[in-house]
Every structure is written in C-alpha cells, then in structure tokens.
Length: 114
Length: 113
Image (tube, rainbow over all chains, first blue to last red; front, top):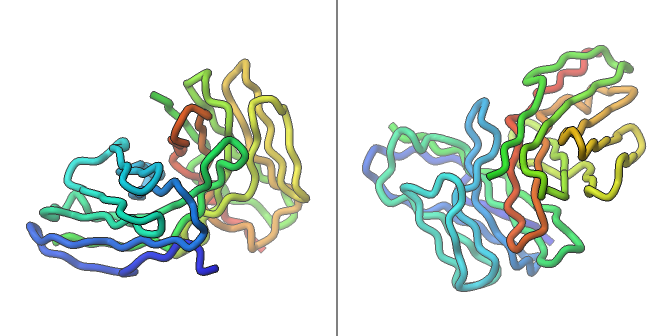
C-alpha cells in the first residue's frame, strides 16, 4: 500500500491565483481530513469528510473548498490564494468506528503565496 | 471546543537521558489521547496512544500517563537516542461522531550525542 499520497510537494503561487492540492489514500478509509501546519500553532483542521459525498468545516475553513466524490480522493482547493495561506498542508485518513482512531498522514505540501 | 496546551516548546537532552513532554486539555468529554512524532520533512506518525479508561501505557522506551482528574497527560521517553530527535505533538479527541482531533502546538526534541 502507498498509504496517503499528496501532490505537489512544493508550490509557489501569486496572490489571487487558484490551485488544487491533491490527496489520495489506498487503505479504504472512510475519514479524511486536511490540516495546515504553521510555526508555533500545531496542526489546525481545515475541512474533513466522513465518507464519499459528505464534507464539513473544521477550525480554519475560510478560503478553502473540498469535495469527496470517491472514497480514495479528497482534494483541497484554494479559490484565491492569499499570503496568509502560506503553510504546510497535510492530508490524513483514518478508519471509522471506535476500534481505531489512528490518523495516517501524507508527506505534506509546502505552499508559498507571494 | 477543546483546547490542548503543550510544554515545553523545545527540549534538549543528552543521549541516554529521559525526556518528558506535558499536555493539558480542557474538554472533560475527551477520551482518546494520541501522541504523534514528526520527523523533518515528513508527516506526523502515531507513536503511542492512551484511552481515558487507562492511567498508563508503555511501549518499549516510550510511556504515556493520563490524569483525568487534572486533565493532563504526559509522554515519557527513556534512554533517549539521536533518532528520537523530532517534533512531538499531543492531541485529544472524543468518540462522538467524527474523530475531530485537537493538537497541541508541538515540542521540538533534540537529543545531543
């Protein structure tokens, strides 16, 4: 299994540009999440999904959109990039149910907005 | 919502010494407390976790303790090795519906050979 994969690894955008960060998992996990990591602030939840067709907002959703058309994929869209969105973005997946809460993280995408 | 505080933000220890990282949480409904290790340039990876019905859990050189009354939990690493150098995150969540995890701000551990 490849686990959780993210593309691209690095990206530089100009203010106002849009882009999509890709995330895919091959573990048949129902739950998927997007986090951003900023220095001194830990990991903050942007959006999450509990299954195909179901998404919801996390702690910092403004400026981001998500969709979940398949179990495997959970792309994150930046509609109009702003310097405040400069960050490292992590996608994660986990099983449903109370038997396992472990989240599996991808390698991250480092985004710079100029 | 849940608030997780983590201390210290940086920690340097000599190889072979022990390291302790402490976290407090605010939501008494939280019942699952994982610890993640993040190596440079990689995503976080679960290293140990504890549920609220357990006070302590060990896995080789790593142990986690939980005090539900005081709402704090700690990570203990004994006989530290250079490969333990990383950023460690504590987190808290409850079992209601989606596993909405709240992370601490991280501790950068440096093990000096």
